Image (cartoon, rainbow, N blue to C red; front, side):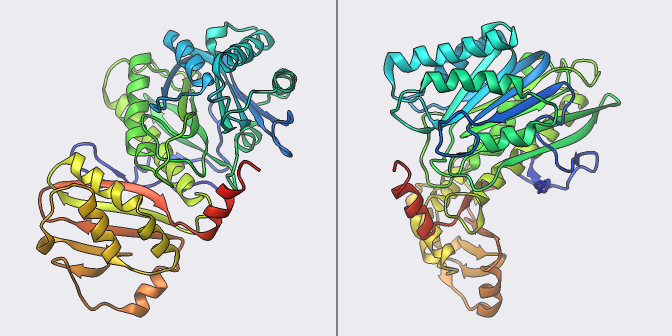
Length: 422
């Protein structure tokens, strides 16, 4: 299923814009939809069953950018990729699932370096044109004999239609792959952006997401590519939370291989605006998919806080509601418990005047001026049965707003995480 192209907020005011008709979501779009990319997904035995290694490859050297977790205990592959991305070019991204290679000391670093070297040797590319990432259980050494054999298979299996396999190979507790591609016109040329992402739990990114990869055949200067990536991440993955946990392995990559034939984007002109808009739409759509597939989730929940005193306070208030276990369990139980919402708002530290607060569940006002009001309970019951629910809070203090994507919290979240290591 191709994720829907979402509405988005303008950076300046947070006002919603209508979808841009020049952006087309491609049917069965994936990481290899842009020209000049191939991918593969293989099984190398890191997981008990299924594919567990993905490789994305550009036929030509691509401009590259990345963002990484700011968790102080960063996994070894994060450190290696951060060193390599300094050259602002890359051709290959290797991702293994089933083992995070985090908190593994000097050996973990050596294994990550060995992994990158093996990829570069197999593809005959410079080692610093190779990026790596890992996801899975923390504290275990990589079984390097399996990793090295898997790399050989992944290289041999590279193909232009290998995107779906790659998206499946990076999954851990995900129930389904997340992938899409979008097409836009830049300087009269048809340009594409493809993407894949994984993540279901341990999700509250800072700077990046669990693991996400973007590819594009657009030509764009390195500094502008990184700025566009940061802008998109701020509007998507950085306003996503499943459980408030920030991983040691969060990272997001983008490769731009200039195969669509457009003159390189070198300034923040109309071409850059179109590229930014397209990248934003893909990133937001994937972030929403990650929230929908949160561990044990049954609902995508969008928390919107409006009329806050500052942008920072709007974000803090929205995030407080989205991370509230009581709010998330109430939504799982289809209970419009606005008292839990207003409590989370108060705990956020944002400036509040209770007599000005309005709260809505699924568009239905449940509290006005900080107090309960009568509402149509039959309509509410029906609305909370839907797969997507929005909580809105108007603070009545200022003009700033923020939006955070999350999910409900079910019995299955506890089961999945209680059994994760075993």
